[in-house]
Amino acid sequence: MEDGTYTAHVVPDDIRKDVGRGGEEIACVFLKRRGYKIIDRNYSRKWGEIDIIAEKEGTVRFVEVKAVTARGADFSREMSGLPEELVHRTKLKKVARTAALYMEEKGDTREYQIDVVGVIMNEQTRTARCRLFEQALEDNL
Image 1 (cartoon, rainbow, N blue to C red):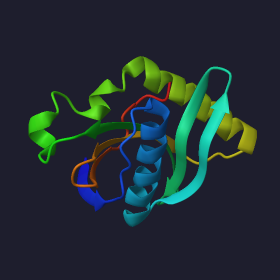
Image 2 (cartoon, rainbow, N blue to C red):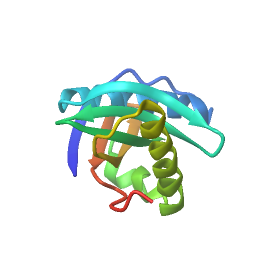
Image 3 (cartoon, one colour):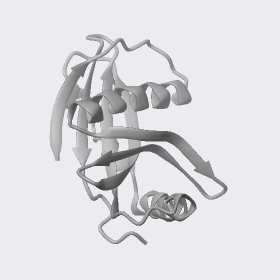
Image 4 (cartoon, rainbow, N blue to C red):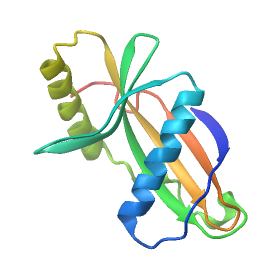
């Protein structure tokens, strides 16, 4: 797991999709700063979607992003839970099935893994805190 704080302009908005899109934008910057190369975004099929597809050190990374907003100045005191805790195993299995289809469609035989980035966007300070969990689903089921 890696922690990082990235200062970003966060527009207050109660619409969940906008929070998700903003979180994905912040996650992309966060991942790029850690040496990831973004390959694709929002890959969608009938049974699932992958937020970010990236590559690092020869491994394809399928990244699920979970973003939430906080209004207070202190991230840790306001949040009763962390956004990445909202990504359940069932969701990760859907991501894994979609990832397998992506690899098959592309004819890509490289190793791949499922990662999760939790993003807490603070409206008051206009900053975001990101946490990376690599290999969130060990067995690509």
